[in-house]
Image (tube, rainbow, N blue to C red; front, side, top):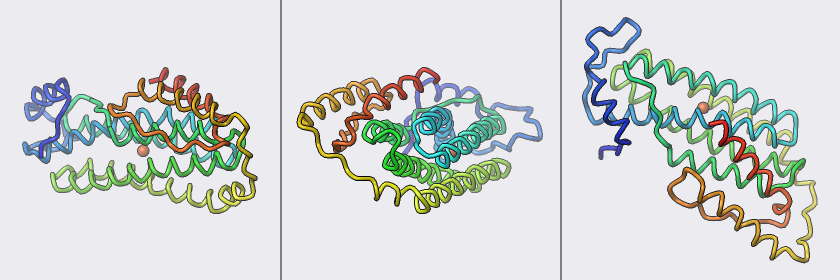
Length: 255
Ligand SMILES: [Fe+2]
């Protein structure tokens, strides 16, 4: 099934693909003109959108994390993500295509979940870090699936230089996933296990309603075409709600 491309992107592809008579040696031999090739380019465009926005998301995760170890892990992967972004720009260059970005619906959903995590956990708690690690690992696993698939497609399409670029990013995503698991197992999960749960406040019902209303406004302004279902709100979650909202607004301003 052919992927639906944004009309502007599609038009650009049609104009510029396969018309490059004088490719230099760094460009791949773009002699494919198949549905698979189109699908591959769309995925690359989605990865560009994802990595670009992930830089800001990681910056927010870093600023809202509790422990220095997790802050440092997010900082390190933010730098890697900037390099991954540059690799995708190289891929476009090697394909002889302009850099384009296409909204990734899957990644948008994971980003939205990240905002909820910040909203629904207590600032300064291990609980916050446990939730951030899980949210980040969902992103990493998604990226591992994407890069892993792209390596296979690039190989099949004969894009050897691109295969190597994709493999490097895939390796970094896997290493980040392992690093996050180690952090969780070494300290964060046990720390959160020892944190006493808050008693629900007397007016918890009212606060929860307010929280959900706030979240709904956020989701309606989100780039995601479909509204995510609200997560179960815990008593602990009410205190940090404004954090995620503020962080998201700041991050969106940097896009
Ligand atoms: Fe990445």
